[in-house]
Amino acid sequence: MVKGEKYIYNTSDSINSVIVGSSLASRIVMDSLPKFYNLSFAGQGIFDGLEILKKTGKYPKNVFIETNSILSKPDEGFISTLFSPISFNAKKYCTTLRSDKQPLAYIFPMIQTILNKKTDHREYEAKPISGDTKANAMFNKVLEMQVHNYSESPDTAFLNHQFVMLKDLITGMQSKGVHIVFFEMPLNPSLVELTLAKAIRNQFYEHFPENGYNYITIPDCSNYITTDGLHLNDQEAHWYTSYFKEAAKKY
Image (tube, rainbow, N blue to C red; front, side, top):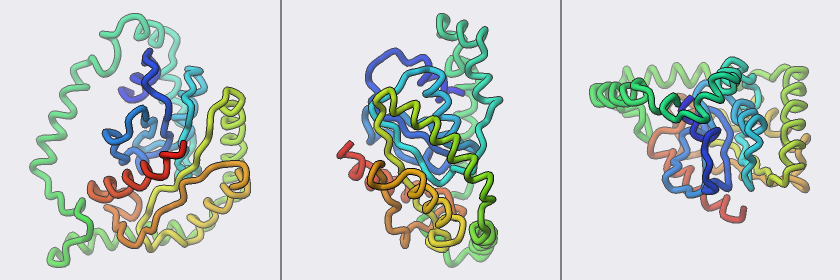
């Protein structure tokens, strides 16, 4: 809510590029990307960030769209809450009502910091620690589940439906002069070439050909172990941010 509202009610001209995506893209380190805003949300997908752009009519010069989460449905409850007429107008004119001004906006990060200090952060290291059998077994079990999921073909009708929705949103943005760039977040190397990943990748190239759209291709994933097969750990997030920043310079 805080992240969405800050974009919705922003009145400066300091943003010229927006990233939309899921919890995967939310790991991008924004401190090193000036004039960028990240509308990627944990537990959600690209359509939520794109709907915020559409409903505000505040389009940046560039929109960078994560391709990994195309199968995530729009969160209608999230969007309707952000744009509820009474709440929207009240927060527009009264900044103290916005989510980042509420006590929970300060209390939650404090609690999270305390919990983080008490939590074993070995899962965020570049590789599972070989000496910790329990941690390795948990990581391997989760990765095995991801391999199973990524070995399945997506439902063709649903996938086509998602691309029709995306095409409509992109056409609307392009009519406003927005430049579109697709990017694929790195995965654990055991997932990159599995059925689901390849099907999504191929469908993007089919619906949005490379001769008409720009792509930041997935980097070499051989060193990306991740925390669960999908999400980057802290070190990997910095690696990918450097890669993304360099590739995005041309835009």
